[in-house]
Image (cartoon, rainbow, N blue to C red; front, side, top):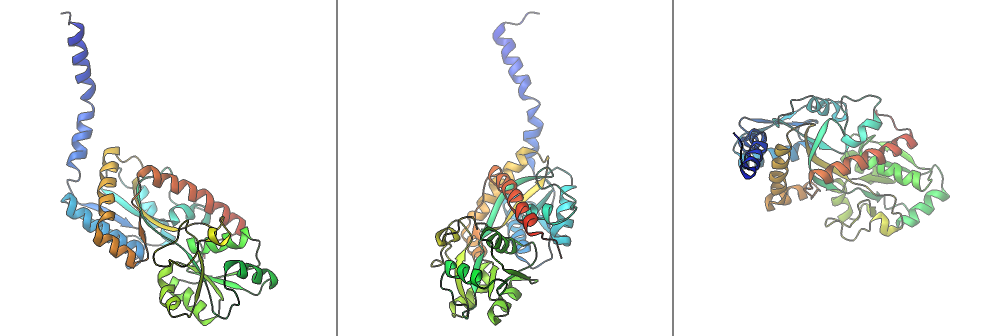
Length: 326
């Protein structure tokens, strides 16, 4: 039987649509069962808090349980490695942080590839790093501090929340880019690092704002600059490093959401839409602000670009400084 040309084209078009129908139907039905949210760190930290906030809201919005599973150890490598090997069906998502881009250069071997093994969903929140000094340090600006360190090689040290943290790497970037003789003193948390800065044991500190804020308000510490591109509401009078004259010293800590690489694009897009909505909710914005975070909620493509950029950037710093995990 010979079909008219118009009839043949109509049938061909209909047939071309058919293979897509199961994928679309599957995405519309997702999720049909509970979804695991891997947090690659111990309970109670900022990654865990963010993961639980997102899991709770996703459960409410999508009508299925999103439950958190903490898989800590090795600077996040164990949990991220477990997520990288999970089924690519949308039923495992992972809360990732800046170590996703840092650890490939920091460790000799890791159980995942940050680019190939994950499909980014969204960069959810970020936070700046603030350079603080003890009041005994005779510097009012970052330029004053740089001149002081250069005039006293080997005398000054800076505290950080730990080896390989974004704040440590920003301190190293400051040291390397300005060719300063400055000693790094790592601690196990931001609170301990600020405690050392407060006591004057380490005259400088690079860390996220929350541990420093009470002491800054009381005048027990002085903030000279922040490392983000723009000023932040929690420290409105503190200039950026670019404003201070050092634009190369730029970077942030960040937290986002990803899924195993190869997860259906429809599910990636659905999760992105839902999490972007979550991060725009007033109660979520208020909650993350108390943790010192700025809500971002990027597209998958923007988050992917950030991971690639930071992997290259921090890799250069780690190699130049000869940093090894402790």
